[in-house]
Length: 299
Image (tube, rainbow, N blue to C red; front, side):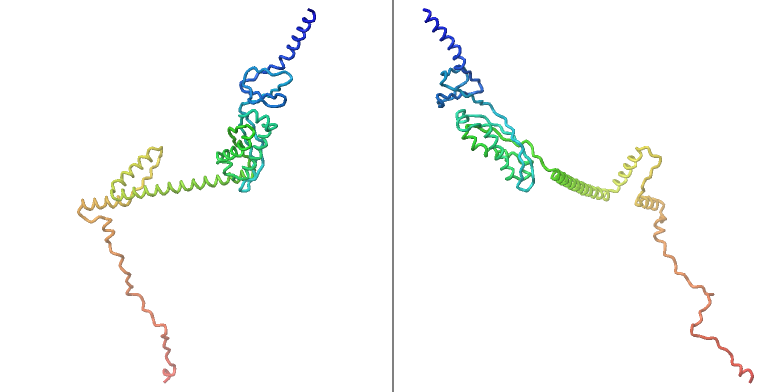
């Protein structure tokens, strides 16, 4: 009887020691890969409590969540010979726990190395403008380059994105000058276009005022009103000559005579100057004075 009690106690102690090591709990975001005598069982274990054979089975838990892995900055030279430093971020998850644990030693380290080499390769194949503005195509190219080796490791690539592109200071200054020159060019074009449109509108306004002289007078009065609205002590108002001629013709037609302006226009030119009659006549230049002969007087 005492022997039976001792055996029961020994079995109870062994059960308390072995039971914790034989029971495993697989979480919802994990899958369990069981190795029995070093060989993998057919299917990974689903979430929940799992009983293992003591001293025979070993379980490896594989995380099935999406892993966010930053890719370190990689220095490279673009296709247009510009030195850049590019870093990216990789999103992936395990879809086949058995391959992720059997076919590759450390799938996370392997994905990191493949991402670095693929990023260097994509830098050398791209131009600077593509790295700065056309990143969608680069993301697709990176994802395609990573998907081929990842499929053999039981890993699915969700997406790859380029985070930042670091440029040399000289290239930044060159790009700033280029942007400044482009904005100045657009400003000049806009100014010239505005001048062209303004000249067209002014030409149409001039033709309208030429056809209707009263429009010019109305515009003049409107200008006077705009100037008078300011607090000015002196008002300089331009008065066109055409208006003076208009008033002059109106006054001439009302008086029945010739207007002063018309008389001034019809006045004859100044008469030519007449030489004075009492001006002395000029002697010929070749004539010399005659001197009397003294011998004729003695005779």
